Image (cartoon, rainbow, N blue to C red; front, side, top):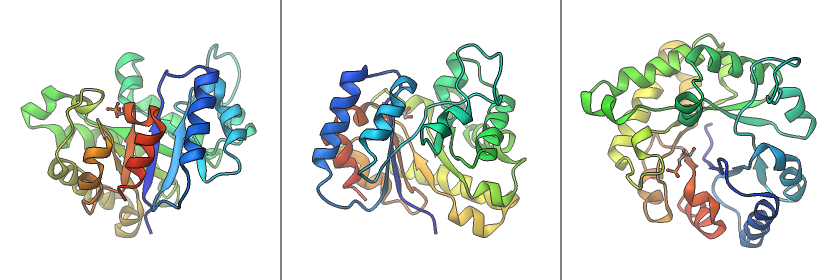
Length: 250
Ligand code: 13P
């Protein structure tokens, strides 16, 4: 069965004391069970601290990125072994900010995904089209192309460890959200595309998250769509109350 997941991508925000403060606020607000898995992705320097501070909660701490190589001369990179050694079991791969600002290609993202899965980690694999592609009407091809190049070398068994996050780039940090219908249309399309490669059962069991200006005010109607299994949230995850209000939307 696929799971509802709410993941907060903190991006390059929060120093150590802000990270600790946000986690304290989240823990204070965790007064009930939510109908979803909760994940937070602080910056790399604070993962160990965040992992330890949340070990008595159901919040999972996940990484925002990982290197495709195992170890060695890769200045500035972080390996799966390093993440694993501090308890991190899930990593976000292929965020549009990694693709667009740091030139991460589909081929590199496929390699990162295999490396993470090889270590037994779970992957949140991001995809999404730019505004021009949406306007030109080729957004399905764009997004399925990212999925095909990033994930279609995997086996169905490996795919069980992958969560897909659809994040239309035009909706990230802009305040403009895809409508629930636009999200559902893409998610259903992605699920049937996954089915062509991995079969119906795996496709049905894959959680597909929506990301792009998710807020407490729009989360319920987006999450109510049958193929939307949760959210990958940026800005609104930096405030504990708004993140928990979004979690309440399931
Ligand atoms: P916002 O929620 O700030 O639009 O960011 C979405 C995102 O990029 C999450 O990975």
